[in-house]
Length: 185
Image 1: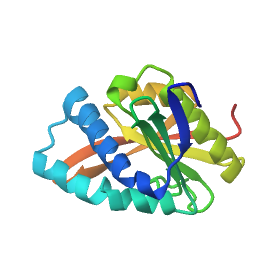
Image 2: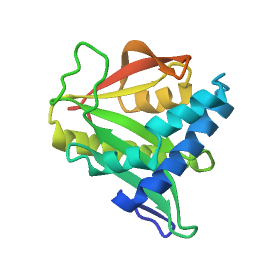
Image 3: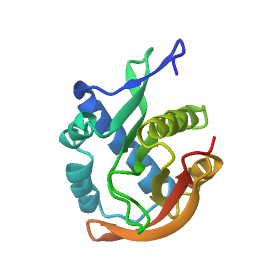
C-alpha cells in the first residue's frame, strides 16, 4: 500500500525504537483506555520492558523466520501501524511449530483506525503466510474482550478454536485463539 501519504514497507533495524513507542502508545490506547482493563501501572511498565522494548522489536525485525511490516505517514514522518508475523507458539494442541504461521501483532494507532489500514495489513499477512506456510492454518490470538479485533479477524475467515489465560505482571488476561485455513481466499 502506497498512497501519496501512507507507505507500507518491511521494517528495518533502525525502526525498533519507533515500533516500541508506537506499540506502547497503541497498547495503552486499546487496553487501558478503550477497554478499561484494570492493570496496575507497575505491571504495564514491566510488560513494556520485557515485551515492548526496542531490543525486543530488533529481535523480531531480525528474525529470519518472521516478517515485520510498518505503515508510515510520509507527510508527518511517523509510523501509524505495524504487523509482526512469525512462528511463535500458540497454546493450542493443533498448532504445529515449524509448520504453522502466527500473526503475532497487528496494531493500528487509534486515530488511524477505520481507514482501511488494518485490512491492508491483514491482506499482507495472509499473502505472506500463504507463501511461507502453504495450505497450513494461520493462527492469531486476541483478548477475549477485544470485540473490534475479533470482528476484523472473523471478516478474514478466522474462527475461535480455543482460549487461554496469561498474565501482565499479576493481572490475568483472557485470550481467544483463532484459526484460519490458509487455502481460503
